[in-house]
Image (cartoon, helix red, strand yellow):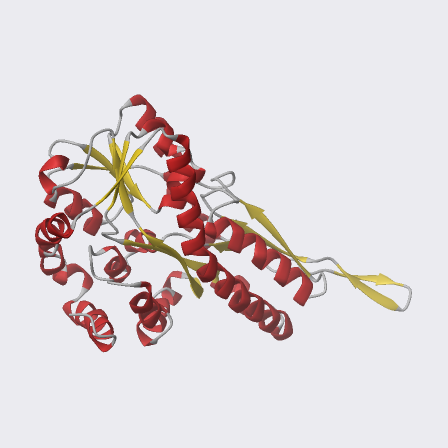
Length: 326
């Protein structure tokens, strides 16, 4: 796993750099894409060239369904999958992040990801050969389709693309839609051909993937959160020299601060960019409509208690209450 070779060069010793292949499924100009590039810059500088980070965006190396297996096998060293991706590995607790309306603000998200709950979730990945390094933010999701989505009844019969998540499946069914699991790289074509009618994403993803070209309506529902976990192959990480690992940890901390700072800015810019095209109508829910969405979706929490864990859901709710949210 550790590509470190010592070569004699007179009295000096030269070393080939340690290669970190960092694969992800979104564009370079998204929050995750920009944060990955920032990590590359910081890591190579901090290790004085002893580490080379190779970034593979837009599923150029591995698609959604392939990347975690590739990481476990050591074919790639680093990923930043969305938090919904861990349930198929058997770590269903990560689906707590998919629950609709469980996070009333990013401040609550950070209390969870940067506190003990986040650490406990990462510890569950160790037995899978994965080490969790950081949580990266991409903000709250909006809904898109080719018809206005103002009330839950408007979803009836729509084929809505989701990530592979039991929570998201149940969410769409609660709205009366038919959930369709698709890899991120397949979504644009599926929307274009009508294989699916709509999707949920933060605005930055809708904009950078040009999904607005094939979606007439966007609803600013902010019904769910989308975040990522930056993870590495455990064997690779544990095998790094301590000073290299320390430098990479510091680089990751700085990249994470950058990622979480730009996420909202990028989503705002994405929404502005979509609006500027004039191709998509952007609608903000009224208080009455939001209440109807919440009423339709809140039962998903209770239905998922057995899968995710009532104690975990309660712990997240306590973090929310600590900041004054009911």
